[in-house]
Length: 73
Image (cartoon, rainbow, N blue to C red; front, side, top):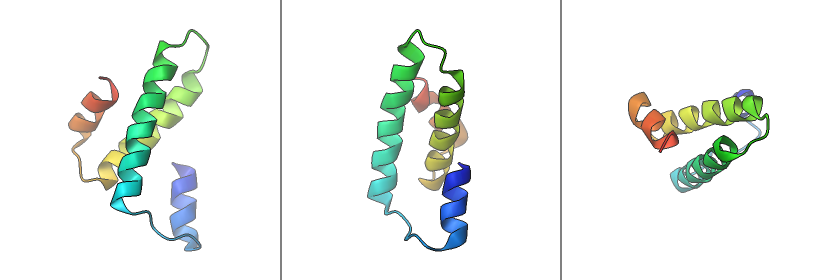
């Protein structure tokens, strides 16, 4: 999340298209599901990815409840 904020604050990078954001959101959901299913201690990774997914969902105009439900499917 901090990286996303820094990228946009710096103005050095162009904004992502809605298609790119949606693709990253869907990929992140798959990655989150894999992390949740693994038996390794990856809590920090899960939390970072969860936060990123919530931000991406917000950017896509989705309600927080909807995003949380999609993440945990």
